[in-house]
Image (cartoon, rainbow, N blue to C red; front, top):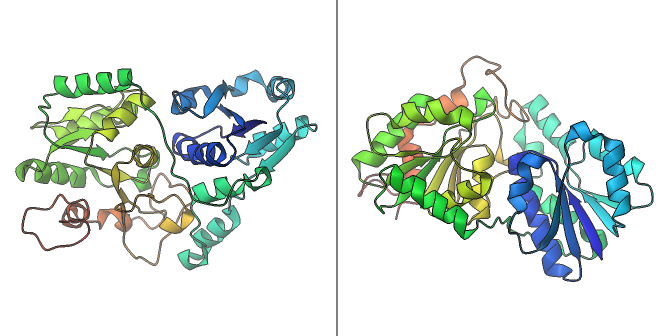
Length: 341
């Protein structure tokens, strides 16, 4: 049986789609699994033992050519984990192929934003929705963890970069201060204070991960002390290899959250305009979502350039003390809470 799993973007969603690959490989070992994504995200599936082939599609290619490629592969089924206009059009262009799709739950999310009522959400995690889309293939509706597989070369490159930044083997504390949308970003001053706390209490060596656009922010956060600025310096598998070595990741609601989940690293996620009920919360048993119960949340499906009310209290109000406590970064003897041991 030959199956194509489709998730075109973005990075966090593509990483989460590996949970469907895990489920399909576990329950249908007879399946030859191919995946389809955009070129920038092919690395997510590199070295995945269950993926026989990763197809890349650049939108400039046109849907007609992509449909011809899909028809030529004689797939038993195509599983659409994206559910946008492009994938629906691709389905229409491949009428001889059986398709399955996942239920996005977008109507509930839009109602929750409109009413500012997270209670209307069913809190189903997106990986569960992905796995449920595999039901026509006989896959059980059991949650699977997303997984990525850094190669030894990725781990070697990660260690070399860390060593070059002054790391000498102490515990690593990962930070991901970048965000695609301004309203999803914990304030820069809070990140600076958190790094100061990590250094002052000897809790570990801070390492910042992210994209090229986060590099200047990372420089400002790490200024004046030890730490590794790896923003824009690592590929997706190399970033996974860095996170794999870390004790914890403190992150905005962004892609590194899901990459850390996929390598088993503990996560402290800072949620502002978005909420757990959207279904993108971290999955580990010791992971934490740190947020504030405000009547204006959720205010956006994905974040915005500015707070609709002008105060951005949802993240400005998340104090460093609480985040440190939830991440086990508080000083020894601090009031117990979160993950402090």
